[in-house]
Amino acid sequence: MGDSEGHIDFQLYRYTPSVAAAVIFIVLFLLTTAFHLYQLIKCRAWYFSAFVLGGILYRFTPFKRSSFYLHPPLYAASIYMVLGRLILYLRAESFSIVPLKWMTGIFVTGDVIAFVMQAAGGGIMASGTITAMKTGEHITIGGLCVQLVFFSFFLITSVVFHKRIRLQPTRQTIDAREVQGLHVMRSWESVLWGLYLSSILILIRSVFRLIEYAQGNDGYLISHEAFMYVFDSTLMFFAMVAINVFHPSVILSQGDKGGAATHSKL
Image (tube, rainbow, N blue to C red):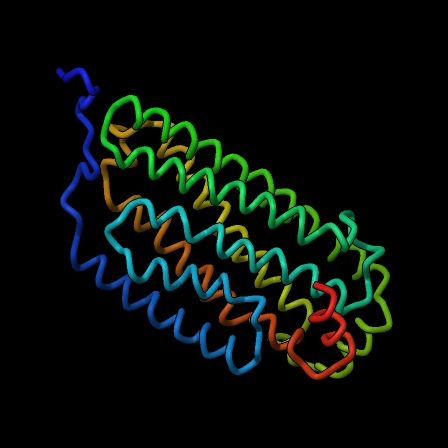
């Protein structure tokens, strides 16, 4: 069954990786990442650098399973920062259930913890022994749980803020709506909808990964490549496209005082 080092039935892949699928997703991520890079440079949206890095990381490592759970925390880091900047832009700090001065620190800290745990778990699993595999899986599962908790709390924070500011619009909100007119795709609310859509896709992906690793190296999900492409690659691609469409730079990179204050304080 095995040897003293515990090399028992460990397989990095329990299927033959599809070259065609990998190439397709490399091209898809190349396109959306290139557009993100264009948006970042054109609008000087440097707070979105981690998001672009996540797309680049996926693009260059299509066959390495460890890469698939390292890029979502990079997406999350940028998404967290956008909410804080948007709240400051709208002068609506009192509507947030998390004090603005702590918001970025709290969510990014949780994101870093999740990132480190998942990276460490992947590194440990790469040794190929059963003992290391089990330890790595447990650490990875812990990292995914941390990510789910913080992302869920982030969504709650976003929805509560959105509900409150719609009920009691600030002067900045009213002014922004008047300036934006019928441009519903270029408004502070479109930024929030982009964050919601991207966040929900990342949450679904994290739940899938949690179940996958909970089943172990010989589980059903990890043994079938199609699940990885449907519940990881496809979801992350659409998460990137959602932000392409509802990019925060349409609001946060405009030459206004709110945007300037955002850049200086967050």
